[in-house]
Length: 419
Image (cartoon, rainbow, N blue to C red; front, side, top):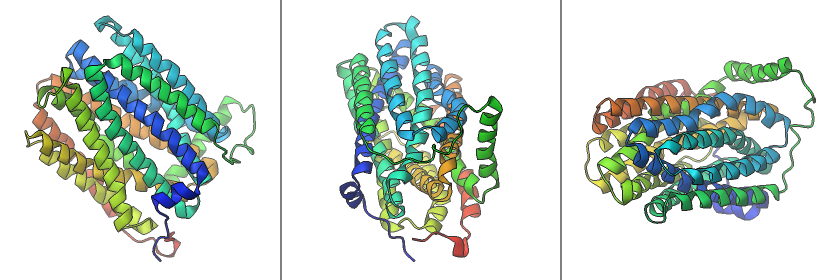
């Protein structure tokens, strides 16, 4: 039977709770991308080093990779809305510290604030993924994830373009102030949203450290022993074997297609193209295939091949407009992978374990992206051309795509949720 998933407009109109959480996502992520473009621009301007830019990405991805599995235990013990609000307030305070960065001697502060900020995000993002099934019906679930992904994409596109414009005209400090304000507004929107949560009521208080490790172990055992869950949870991490493309945006923007001061405008446009692509991908996938479980399983592997094609062609063009279109194509595939893997986990993982599973998934994603970004910057500073780097990264999408296609293409018979 075909999926009966509702559309985006119907979801927003009829579900006031999800709508308010969605508003919080919009303002928070818009400010985030303004902030990110400013940081990349500032670091390269102060150091002139691709490895220094990679170090920013390491500061973004490594702390969450370490903290996220343990954050998942807290997410399953506390009201997830509370975790999200506190995360927003902490990040607002951290971003304001970036106003004190003025010269190369202050670069350590960028790395420190970035690491702490994204460590805090390791609580927010899994909590947001885990809370969505508590505020939507099964019929609304795929649309909710699609809209969340499309919103992330739209805010990336708008925020990156605005971030490049703000950093290139008003200066990076203006972007930092806007980002801090966006976190405060997000905290207010989420904090005043009524959400019914019961997962934490049965959790015992005052557990010893051994019980905390056992709680994490319970999530890991479920992940490793439950059919196909490991593949759903690994899908985003495997795609991010090519996560070094984020370093390429800064390098191509400043060295190949420089627009604005220190290439800030071209960097912003490359990130904006990424955002547009990730917005289009789920829209097309949901319109063509819908949200039936067998279809989502099969689409996971196929989505990687779009990313391979996009970045392989990107490596061979020197026309900026064509480069932007190819970045869009590559990230259409990435977004389909993101939306469907998230929805499959939300459908199949029990509520009591959902925070831990999403946190483990987030840790894997962050760790793989950190390694890919680091080695991309290292290879660039060692003299490998940007074009060959793009070729190498495009091929990292190929093997995981083949593996997931072979593993998940089979039918799951009567056990499939095909609503």
